[in-house]
Length: 423
Image 1 (cartoon, helix red, strand yellow):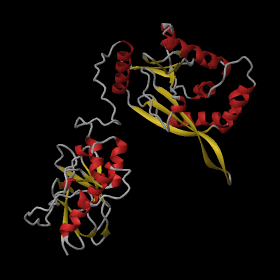
Image 2 (tube, rainbow, N blue to C red):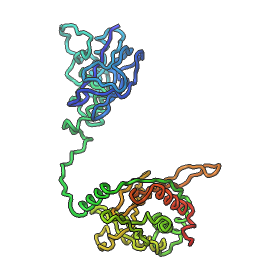
Image 3 (cartoon, one colour):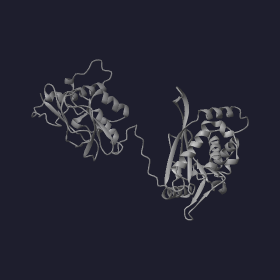
Image 4 (cartoon, rainbow, N blue to C red):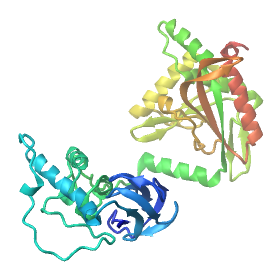
C-alpha cells in the first residue's frame, strides 16, 4: 500500500523549527483526514497539525520535547488505494465547495467535470513527501468547514499559506497567529495603536523611585492566611441596615479596628526603620496609610491615630481622604507620616497579593477579595465567606514567626467579631 509523508509545514515567517508538545496519534492508529496529529510549539505560539489524508500511521518523528525542522518528516501515513487519488481527493472536494459557495442558490449541484479543464498529459507524480497533486483550478481549495470559518473571521483564503495548496484548520490557525506580524488586517484584527513615549515625571516618577528603593533596600517576605469572614459580613450587613445617617460600612473599618487592637502585642509591626542611623522606631500610635488609586497614580493618605476611632469614624475618614487624594486636594500632612499601610483592591483583590512595603515602614497589610466556598464546619459542609489576607514585612525588623502570630491574632478577631467591641 502506498505511503504518504506529511512534512512539517512552514507555520510562521522566520520559523526554522518547532518543538513537539504532544502527540494525538501513535504508530498503528487509523486516522481520518483533518484529524489532529500533534501540537507543535514555536517560540511564538502552539499550533495543531492536522492530517491531510486518511490512513494508518506507520511512523512518527520523535517524542514530545523533540525539535523538528521545518520541512522534515513529521508523520508517515499508509493510505488505502492509489496514493495519487488519495492526495487529490481533498482538492477535488474543495473545488466542488468553491463552486457551491459561488452559487449558493443553484437548484442542482455542479459536477466536478463542469469546472475541470480538459486533461493535459503530464509526467507522473511520485507519491513522495510534500508532492501533492496540483488543483485543477486556480481557486484556493479548502473543506466547507474551513471555508465557512475563514468567512466568519473575515479572512481571505488566498492570503493563507498552506502546504500543498489545500488550506486546513491548522493553516488557518497559523495564519491568525502570525497575521498581525505579517501586516494582515482582517475585520476582526484591531488597528494597531501607535507607540507612545510617556515621560516618567511627577507622581509617577516618585512612585517609581519609592518602589524601586523599597525593593532594593528591603528584604521582603509575604505571609498569607485564609480568614472565615462569614460572621463579620453578617454583622456588617446588620449594622448597615440600621445605620441611619451614618456612612455605609465596608470591611476596611472593621479590619482597621482589628489591626489597632492587636498592635500593642506586636509593636514590631507598627514601626519605621531608619537605615542610615540603624534605628527602628516602634510607634505607639497607629497612623495608618491607605493606599489609594488616583488618576495621577498610587497615593497613600494617612488616617491619624486610627486606634482612637470607632468603625463609623473610620468609615467617614476613609471616604474623606480617598476623595481628597483623587481630587488633588489632599494636604501634604495628610500624605505623609504613616507608620503602617493597608492596601486593598476591593472586589478585584485576587486570591493573594505580595504588596510592596511603603518605605521606611516595615510592614504592609493587604486583604484580598471575599469568595463564597463550601467548607467543613464540624461534621457538616456549609457555604462560607472566605478571604485571604496578606502581609509583607521587612525581614531585617520582623521575623516570620512574629508576622504569622500577628496575622493569627487578626484572624481571631475577624472570625469572632464581637471581640472587636470589647475592651
